Image (tube, rainbow, N blue to C red; front, side):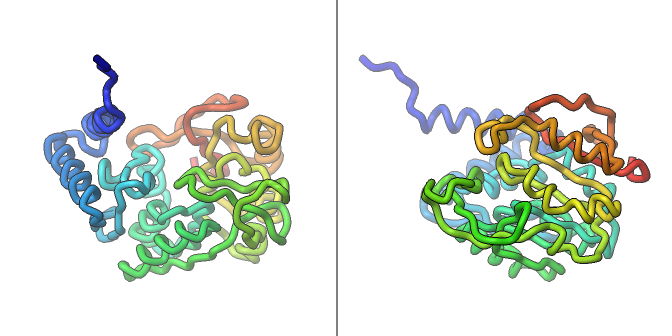
Length: 281
């Protein structure tokens, strides 16, 4: 007899553990579990779920779209990071969400009063992003392109949900997308915050923002910090640290209150790292 645990059971167990232990559900764990169960049932019936983001934001969530699913399971999903942005952003600030996916961070920042530029190159993700933006009366501009060190065309993987990434080899397949630079997107504007989640090519985005970084026109950066850069660029994250230090940035991690704490910069890490100008500590 085969006693292997079915994958659906294992996945359900992981979801329940995520919901039960997440700080967003502290004090309301049972309602969080009930919300997750309703979402799972609706998803298996082919139905989307309308869920909240922040105080007044809304977005569509689909069962097999991980970025949106996490918003249902634990609003907000990236608790420490999103608490930091809620503390930092004030009405009228500019926030740039690079690798916006379906727009959880873009909507969160806009709900805090920021003007938002949401950058998403994936065709399906950009479609969902626009649908979510249309649900809200927020000042969000959607740019369907990638960001890199120079404008042009690159390839993007498809069918990988939130882990789609740029392909630097033109023969690697994928879909062809337009790419621009963060310097071009910003022009001469100051961005209070920039979140960069591009699955390993964050250094290319920063290389395309050297003018803004040199002129200290980005106050706070949130950077994905994992091992993907070794695979895509053949390097760890330390070149990013060197570039940002040269421009006067310090490295921190937010705690559960969204307050910045000093952090050790390593070649890779499991959590996002924030790079901040001293006045934003």
